Image 1 (cartoon, rainbow, N blue to C red):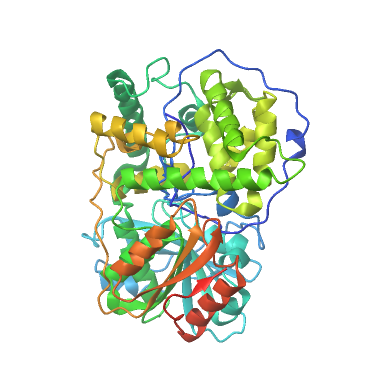
Image 2: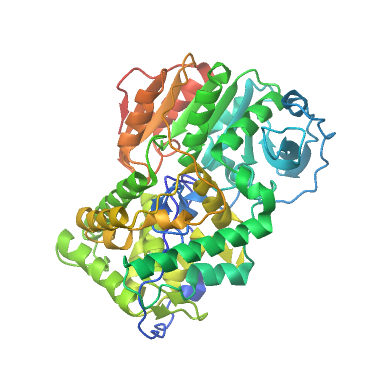
Amino acid sequence: MNEVPGTPGMPETPRPPVPPVPPELQGMPPAEPAEPVKRAILKRPVTIAIISMVAVVALAAFIIFPLILTAQGDAGSTTVATKLPEEPKGTATDFEKQQPNWQSCGTGMQCADVYAPLDWKDPSGEKITLHMVKQPAKNGKPIGSLFVNPGGPGASGADFVLDSVNSAVEPAVQQQYDVIGWDPRGVGKSTPVTCLDAAGMDKYLFGVSPADGLTEGSDEWIAAAEKESADFGAACAKSSGALLGHVSTASTVQDLNMMRAIVGDPKLNYLGYSYGTYIGARFADAYPDKVGRLVLDGAMDPTTSLGEVVREQTLGFEQALRAYVTDCLKRSNCPLSGSVDEAMASIGSLLDGVDAKPLKGSDGRMFTSGTMLTAIITPLYSQSNWPYLDQLFTSVADGNADVGLSLADFYYDRENGKYTSNSTEAFSAINCLDYPSDIDADRMRKEAAELAKIAPTIGRFQGYGDLGCAGWPYTGTERTAVKAKGADPILVVGTTGDPATPYRWAESLTKQLDSGVLLTYEGEGHTAYGSNACVNDAVDAYLLKGTVPPEGTRCK
């Protein structure tokens, strides 16, 4: 399989500035090709992210999202040892009565940690902690708290606010709300899921796979892929313990309701991007009477199966790549040539070449077709990041793997050989509880053939996504529709050219919700708030005044 970013996932940061390519990656000599090997098992699909940002073959979402998910900061991540409140005794109500010890942790920011039950069915049992970051309302007179989630799963909401609050929320909203980001259970500075050390993660994501040398889709290849996923799951269970079975979105929804009560808000005001829309939708369905003003941007459809997510995101990223190519060919410095179809075929040939004969990076890591696909998909979350693709295709054509590896490192939060977050482990752990695993070889082969047909450039590298959770220590749950009967109006934002969370998902979610209202952005990219003045005005009016856009509102 091949490594790809996470999906519907996540922008984890919807609109960061385009960072410059490091000087050390400019003008580097071609990398040394390695000996030919078969395609390796996909280490992390871009799908479930499920957006940003799995260890298999899907296009997530969560995406979903290095270039989109992480922005370098206004305040700068600051680790502050916060004092926990008095430990709750044993009921859900006890947890809601906690008094956070907010402490300064950056320019104008405050941090705090609170307790949550490991298992909400047993609140008197073992406890975990949740990390929060708050920017108090700038006018000093908050109308309430606005909880924010950037996507993922596995992305840090605390860092999102601490480092990139201006990417998260528009200035007018910052004036009147206490903006709060938190690390969901299993993520970041909350009690984290852990699986492997840095060397182990490198081997898992970039190393030789047990499936090397086997024919993709064969019984032997599937068995090897299953074993690799099962081994990774076993490592996570050994390192994380019982926590691994309690990081589902359903548990996070209960945590969010607890935090709402802790900050004293009678109803939840919430802004969720990408996978964050799934948290918001599930919250509304579980606690419709606690719904305040909810904005769900880059919406996921709660009813989609993993196979459907992979299919939609594969098609979405194929179309986004085609949009990039169409734009590129209009420029004199475009690394591609010919018609759009010919240029897409050229990209496919680069993928095939790396698949047959991976490149070796300057640090010795192998650059496979899976890693190249991760490098391609990462910039496609935002049109502002398309220039990275120019550099990627130029460098790979020259036999240089380092630009591609740098993009993959950005996606995996890898810097100088170290992983700066546990986003990859958390991504898999959460998704494997949120989706049921169905290892049906014949069905997966048919789906793989369909992907190759509907997405001629990248589809042949995207099959067999179900294998990412094969042999996982805990069973995933079935996907069901949401309704949120009796909830206040919920604003769903959908972008017509969103590659990670297709526009039809926003339409579907709006129809499922009793009080859903759809705001459409006719444009490219993953999520819309902060990228378009019309969308910004509509969302701000809703958050600040409760004004719901007229039915059928479309922004361009």
